[in-house]
Amino acid sequence: MNLQLDKLPFASGERLLFQGDSITDTGRNRGYEYDLGQGYVAIIRGILTALRPDLRLEIINRGISGNRTIELLERWEKDCLELKPQWLSVFIGVNDVWRKRTEKMGGQKFVPLDQYVANYRSLLDQAKQAGISKFVLVSPTLIDKYLLSDLNMLLGEYDQEVQKLAAEYGAIYVPARRYLLEALERNPEVTWLVDGCHPTVAGHSIIAMAWLQAVAAAQA
Image (tube, rainbow, N blue to C red; front, side, top):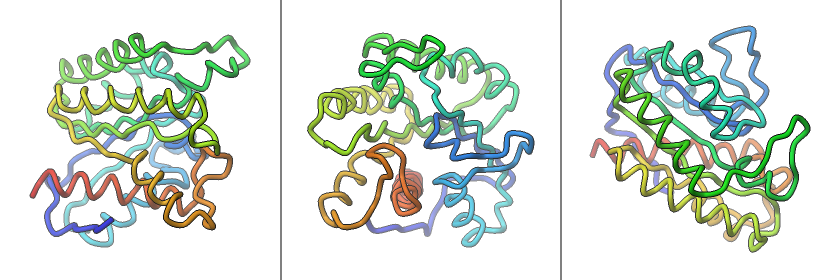
């Protein structure tokens, strides 16, 4: 990955909202609205601040552990539309698929691909109607350490649909799944993922660099 950040598409003072599940949440303090957690969102903020402090970007993290597209829809008004971001980054899908193997306490179930796409499209449509026009869609990544497992292969199909949605909505697509797979193959001795799903600091850095590279490339 060759990270080139000479040009960025952000205007001064813009608000960037990151949405997703535990990979976005990363233990953030929900009592403090600007806490970014300890993952890729915080890394992105650090790099952007270091390289372009003049932009004075406002970055907000509203990822919540365990969320599927269904839970995003349930809290979309409060945790997205009311925040009125200029940029919306969405990273969702692992739990939609994971529930096919293990249902979560509280009744969370597997979200089939067609319903996942319908939910995702509803999230983006509502955002557009609220005046949000700049989207970054991050590919769902991995579920377990067995890369050819049934769930990892199925999640690849969900990733393909995210790519299609990005093209349909004129969004920036971030191939985080591909970069993580390449890192696992290139340097298998490095612990990129704690449990095959949740990234280490190194894994979060891969996602952050993939995000920044995709956004910068869109401006080139």
